[in-house]
View 1 (tube, rainbow, N blue to C red):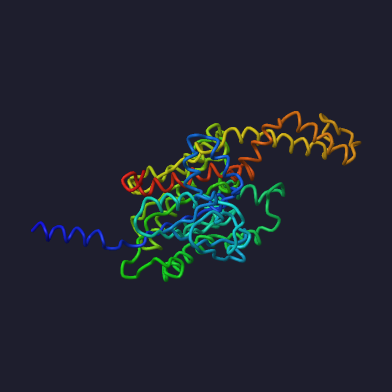
View 2: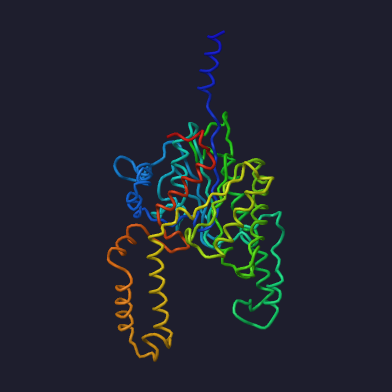
Length: 408
């Protein structure tokens, strides 16, 4: 009996497991705008130095995953020239001008895959679909949410006197809205199904006998909704972003239905731009993003992962100063009465010299060096900080894999 049991245990241990498939989707921050050149900044913090070791191989180059592959669908903001990048996961699958070629950037996919690669015995396939500038209220709008409809604020504004932000041709605007509604949701689902139809095309380790399992979905999006004051009016008032919560709940239900995975674990990467000291409306948007994870129907399989703790406060403080410099440049060009070029007498050379001196007073050489070491993009792209994206990817993976599966 003992011999039979031992044989069964050995057979079970040798039995191959299904390919684990994870879907990553969203807008520009899921694309990822952190340049590889900012990796060294991760090493400055003893708490994250071990993460950098995971991200690099013994020669100091970005690590290539042993058992994790990726299919990455992306394209221009309007969805034209969509293309697919494939291969073993490594750095370089961040934002791309050409989907087939590395642009030297990472998003959360890199450390997400590294974490899964280390944690799971079975091979892993990441299917990533991301495009910058896309909203949930329009381009990613899920089918069950119905068509995009004007709210009362928009009806009053758009059909009133012409003004700032009002469409010049309402019929044309409505047609464009209709055409764009749900378009990137469809791109996403169609691509996932395309990959699932032949996983071996992307992942050579796939064995049809063992099959595959859709093991999780990560959603990192939100900036375009957060700053859309027309779709989400009533700035500063409670419930301003309740529509987003409803749309996201529809989105979760729909992707599960469309992919045939009714209990697929789902991670919401909660907007972290601005860090822990963000303004009131940003905090309100984060609460709206988190809300679906608190719904009874999603209990235990939808997880909200805050990303604000991963924002670099020291780089953010420098970025605030850089914003002041940009604002000063605007004042100099607009003949602002309270600034140096009030009467418009300054030449372009004088403006440049003024701004150079203004910047020198605001930003120290040490701060300038720190910025170059850790940042590579704007605040709405988490400053293009690899440390931030690395921490996000790891946290998303941990939320899906769970402590029991992660190796120390």
